[in-house]
Every structure is written in structure tokens, then in C-alpha cells.
Image (tube, rainbow, N blue to C red; front, side):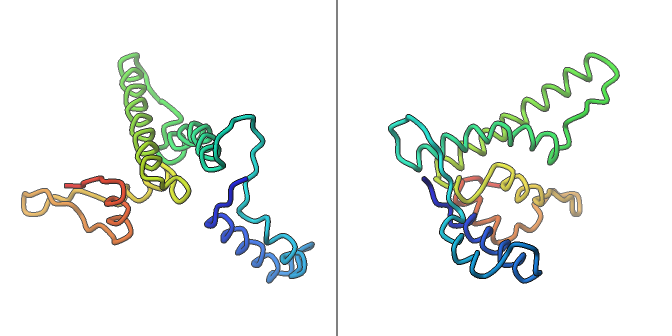
Length: 160
């Protein structure tokens, strides 16, 4: 059994919103009964590891599916539209590099013990707003917001 406080807070918020909107079946009494289960993940296994280690193993398996989801949705790489073999090979190669980057980000999150707070997709969303701009013939990095700077520092990623 593993408790994730961020998921717990999100589930409590969602439940209370349903309660405020008078959706059927939700009441404050039900909330009081269910609040102890919010954010709890239960995994049955025969592994002799800690709850945290088992959760990380589970999350790494989910990360594989999430990586393909990132390719399809965030990077919009689910259709090739290629008209010749060389273009298709290039497209597959770029997707392979993209997947390697996603797994690198996942590994960094795992090493810094940030998997309970962030996913590889979260990091890509933060990073996609960092741009290079050409001003007066010189390339400069766009402004990076404070949250992204903190995250980059935690992951030891240097944007130059």
C-alpha cells in the first residue's frame, strides 16, 4: 500500500466539487467515509520490497505506456504521412530519439526521487515553453519561469 499526497489532494478536491455541484450520490458524510482512501494505491505482489520500491516498479511499467502516449499525443507522432522509404526511416529514427529522451527524463526523475511528483510528460510540458530567439543576429534563450528553473536545477539540467 502506498499513499500519494498529491493524488489524495486532487481526489479530495474533485469529490468536494461534485458535492458542491449537487451531483448524485455525493454527500459530506460520504466524503468523511472515503477521505482515508483518497490517494491510496494498493498493489498485490509476491516481491519482498518496500511499498515505495514496488510503486516505482509499477510506475516504470506504466511509464512505457505513457511514453507511447507522449509520442502520440504530446509530440503528435502517431501518423507518418511519409511517401517514400527514406522519409519513413528518418521518421522512425526521430521517434526513436524522442523515446530515448523520454526514458532519459524518466531515469533522471527516478534518480532524484521525483517520480511521485512529476512524470516525463510533465517535464516535457515545462520544457516546451523554453525557446531560442534570434535578436539582432544573436541567439538568446527565452525567459524561463521560476517553477521551471527550480525543476531544471533539481534534475541538474542546464539550458544554455
